[in-house]
Length: 325
Image (cartoon, rainbow, N blue to C red; front, side, top):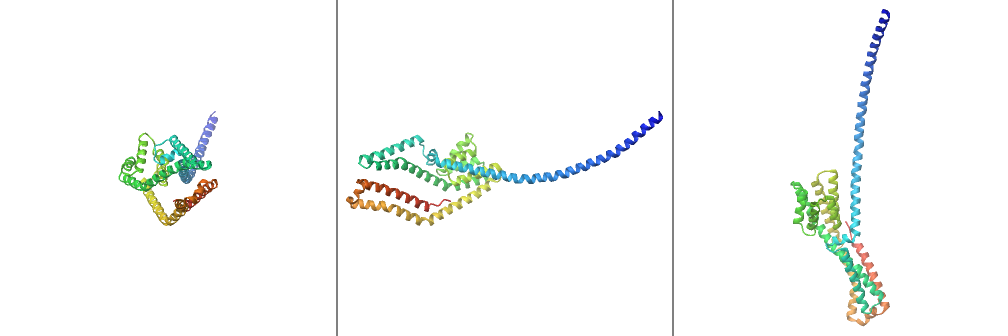
C-alpha cells in the first residue's frame, strides 16, 4: 500500500514537473505566436491603409465623373425641351399658348399669300416659315440674349460670394446679397434659388433647376464646384476664387476671339445680305423685269430654291465664324 502511494506521489510529482516545463514552453510559444500575430497584423494594417488610399481616390474620381455626366444630361435636356427654352427666354407663356400662337402665325402665313394668288407650294413654305421657324427663332433670340446677360454678370456674383464666405457670412446670406444687388436676369435667378431653398429644396436641386433655366458653362462649373465641395469638403472660398479666375480668363479669350473674327463676321453679313438687297433694288427701279419671278410658277420655284441655298450658305458661314469656348 505504501509502495502504491509512493508510486502515485512520484507519478504526480513527475507529471507536475513535466506539466510545468511543458506549460512554460507552451506559454513561451504562445507569446511567440502573439508576437508574430502582432508583427503580421501591423503590415496588414499598413497595407490596408495603402490599399484604401487608391480606393478613396477612385471613389472621388467616380463621383466627379458622375457629376459631369449628370450635368451633361441636364444640358441636353435643357436644349431639347420646349418648356426649358421658354424659361430661358424669361417668358411666362405655357407650351400650349406658344403652340397656339405658332399655329395662328402659320395659318396667317398660308392665308395671305393664297389670297394674293401665289402658288400653293409657296404658300405652304411661307406657312412653315412663319408657323415653325419664326416663333422658335424669336424664342432662341430672346433666350440667347438673356443667357448672355447672365454670363456677363456671373463672375461678379461669384466674387461677392467669395468675399462673403471669407468674412464669415453664411452662403444663403451671400445669395440674398447677390439677388438684391445684381442686375437682371442674374438677380431674379438667385431670388428663385432662395425661394426654392426656403421651401426645403437642397442647394444641388436648386442649382439644377437654375441650370435648366440658364444652361451656361459658367453655371455648370459653379454647380460642379459646389457639389464636389459638399461631398469631399475643402476650402470653398479658395475653390470659388479659382473658379472666378477661370471664368474671367474665358471671358477675356472670348472677347479676343470676337475681335479677331469681326472681319469675317462683317464679310458674312455683306455676302448674306447682298442678293436680297440687289433683288430689292432691281424690283424698285425695274418692276417689270422682276415681277415675272413672282408671278410665274417657274420663277416661284427658283425663288424658293434660291432661299434654300441662301439659308444653307448662311448656316455654313455662321458655323465657320462661330467659336465656342
